[in-house]
Image (cartoon, rainbow, N blue to C red; front, top):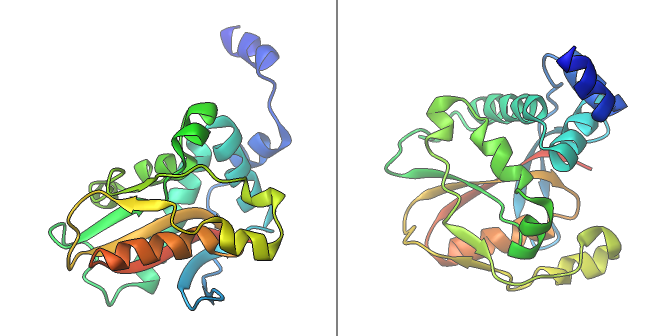
Length: 204
């Protein structure tokens, strides 16, 4: 009875239905290189319907099942593609979700990439630090800009708050398009002395 009532108040969306039916997201790892030379490892394609549904449900509804699907995809890709790196040494490795601006986080109520990282398997989620990198400037939404404008939009917007000299930072985002955000964040972390591996769950 109560579940029926909830279904009436919060009707299931097509994306939610697809997420509920999905057990594993299809991996399709590929490394892309941005215009400035930053390498970004992407786990799969955004165009895959189940991937698109999971990302939309995570961003729009803070869906836990969607976060778990994406986190498992991310974990499997990291273990497979970065096996040669001593990833899980907690003294040297940290996983950093790409931050949103305070305004954007306040309006949405959460940062989707943080929720994704929280859903990682325990041995990885223990390495997540959401305070190392902050976004210090509000900028126009990337989707409203041209490709050229996107590449310039993110200049100087991130700040590193901790000593990360000689640490290996796994920098995570949900979707990469031009890579402008990940590129700028990578540069900020590298200037602070870290070795950075940039990873996105999906590429569009």
